[in-house]
Structures are given as C-alpha cells and as structure tokens.
Length: 547
Image 1 (cartoon, rainbow, N blue to C red):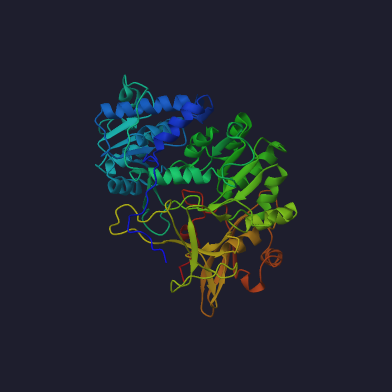
Image 2 (image 1 turned 120 degrees about the vertical axis):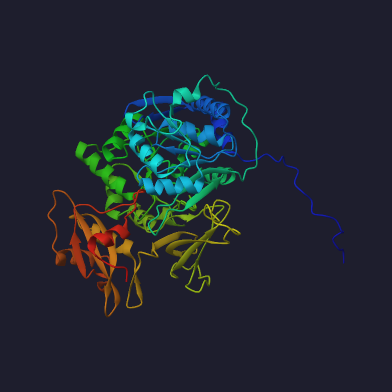
C-alpha cells in the first residue's frame, strides 16, 4: 500500500492581498465612475455626485485626517443621517484603517455618551439637526476632544464644543488623490450598536474582511442582485446608516455599479415616495412599518405603479395584507433576515419549488419564511439544553449562527469569541435550508406549556381591514402562566371592530386557544430606533409585568 510521503501540505500560490473597504470605492470610481449618487441634504435639498466624485471627496477627507494627526489608532464618530457627507465619511475614514462609529441620533445623550466612552471616540462629525444633541453629548462625556460641524456656519448651541470647527476648515487645502494604505483585513471598520431593548446597547465591530464578504454575499442572486444589470438598478436604503450600515447598501451599490439614493433625515413615506418618483428607484429596503406607510402614500396620491420593483423587508414579518397591497402597485416584497451582529444571514429567495406555484401561493409561502441560509453563514436550532434539532420544518428551537460575517464578541468583552451566536430568535429550519423566524424568545408567549407565536397572532389581527398595526404581548395568568394580549392601532377611515368581531376574523388564521384574552386600542405603538415594535415599552404603557 502506498503511503503519503512525509512532507508538508501544499500551499496555494495566490497573492496575499487583504480585502479592504477602500477597494470597493476605488473599484467603483475606476469602473463605474460616472454612475450617479444622489443624496438629500439635512436641509432637504438634493445633492448629486457620482462614484468618482465620492472617491475624490473620500480621499480629501482622508488626507485632512492625516494632516490633523489622526492615524490608525484613532476612533472617529458620526452623528448624522443618510447623506452624501456620511457616505464620504464611510470611505474616507475606513480607507485609512480607522474605525468609524456611527452614533444613532434617536438615542438619549446618556446612551450616546456610554457608547462614545466605550469606543473611546476622539472626534465627532455632526450635522445641523443634531447640533443640540452634540452639545448634550459633550456635557455627558469628555472622551470626544474635537467636534466638526458638517456645514458652513456653526449653530449657536454648538459654538462652545471642544475643538469645534466646520468641515470646510477641517478639510483645508487637502488634496483629493490618495494611495490607500494596506493593512490587515481583520482591522476594525464600522462600529454599530444594537437596539438595546434588553439593556444597554452592545457594540458590534465589523472588520474590513466581514464587510467585504458580506457585500459580496449580498450581491448574489436573490439578495441585491436580480434580473437587472447593475447600471440599470437604483437602490434606496430606508434603513439608517447607523443601523447595520444601512443594510450594507452603501457598500453593495458601488460594488455592483448601481445608482445609490440616500434619503437624508426624512425617512417618512411622503419623502421616500418623492425620491422614488424623482430618481426612478428600482429597489429599496426597510422595515414593514415603512412599507405600510409607503403603500398608503401611493394610494393617497392615486399612483398605481412606479419604477420600484423590489422591496427588501426585514426586522419583523411583513403582514400579508401589506404584501398584497404592495403587489398591486407592482412592488415585489422579499422577506430576508439578519441582525446587527450578522447582516444578511438569510437570502431573500423563495423555498425550493415555489416557482411552480401560483403568485398568491408563492407570496404567502415566501412571507412566512425569511429565505434560504446564505453562503458564509451556518444556522442551526437547538433546544433548551443546547441539543441541535433536526431541520425538518417542524422542530422549533433557539436559532444560532456562526461564520466569518458573524459577531463573535461584543465591544469590550474579553476572552475567546463565542463558537455560536445565540440570536435570541425562536426559529424553524426546513430541509431546503429556508428559515422561518417564529418569534423573539423574549416576546414569545408560553400558555399552558405551549408556544404562541406573537408575529402570527399580529398577522392574523392585521388581516381585518380595521386594524392597521398590532402587537401581541404575554400577560400573567394564574392557570396558564401566560395568555396573549393584543394591542391594536385602527386603520384611518375604517370602523373599529369590537372584540368578538376581531376574534372571529382572527379565528380564520389561528387556533381558538391562541385568541387574545384582552384587546386594547391605542393611537400609536412604540417602536425602537430601528423601526421594530418596542414590546418592553409597550408592556410599560399597558402596565403589564413580564410573567
């Protein structure tokens, strides 16, 4: 018998070139330089550039940072919205190997100070709408030693900030060409924080490698790449840039040569529809609540169809009624799944064999699942003892994920990265690799030892034309431990159903024992800064304690 000779393993002969974010913008400038990039400024005016122009502005910012003494050891924060200025910050800062911390303007000064202290931010770039917030931040932390205003005249409330200057003064006479430095690909890139619905927000530190891999993964079929070539696609991230890097669209758009449209600080339906119409947007991404509002805005204006073809949906399940209304306007919703800790873990692809079904069956099936497991992401479900459950489409368990795009540990945590990330979701995985998120573990209702999926209950309620939005929470019960309570927002112009009428409607979609014991009506439901239902706040409003 022949034995393997005693020698070492043969190594590959490929060049060892790091995967860096600067390669994305350099590529776009070189090969898609004249593709338009459009942004709404914070004063709501429209600014136009292209990928070559964004690259030049990023290079100028990078040169200015070097001139001011900021190097790879620095930490830079932004307090702004989805604008071209913010896009330039992404590439100018990351291109030098400096991490960029995107602060969320919707949070309190106390939370922002906690984040700035944890990251150890050195300098903060902010815009006019956030001038007062920047002043409050400066009072709450002394970590930030310099503030740069993204405008011409510094607002009165910001004139006494440490090291305050305008972006024009900061840039000075810096040149707009640069040879981007090379460094290790696992260097920190952007830093985003979780919503913090269960405590203090947690910092997720993306690397250049993870962003590059994630951008390539999201550029695959059934994600951000569809039937149109890149130059024919115009994408609009409705998700904010401080939330999972606007679902990676600021990176995938230049990678694919797509036109990018940034909505500024106005993320309401009226403003978004204006941009869709003006810029011929073909694809956009946002949480279900904004899609509900967009459909209402289109109907209010009497618009039957637009250029918009694809709607990427994540955050929570899209109600079937909203999906059907979107389809009437020529918009195809694509449900996907990810987290701040692991963007794009499931592709927006239909289950295997779905293409043979009629359109209604396809949509219902696709909306009940979050797509197929993506490349570079391993998903599994485990029971309460951590034992892996079968991928049979029936076994519910805690969803865990791992891979090179997955957060192994949060900022400030010590020790080895976790082998698997516990997502906090209860899910089912099917044999064809499609994933169905049943509920958030902290939101699931366990009645008499059996689980009631709150998203399914909410979907059932919203099938009634008188219910615009619904949230299900668990309330203590002496016999069953928990029973569901439903909190609803009425549809304007439609009579509100009484409890029995609503329950009868829901009975067409859920088992009788799932029906809520209590139903309450409110004007609005609380949402987190990322647009998800805030059930912690809702329990407080309803005076409900966690069972």
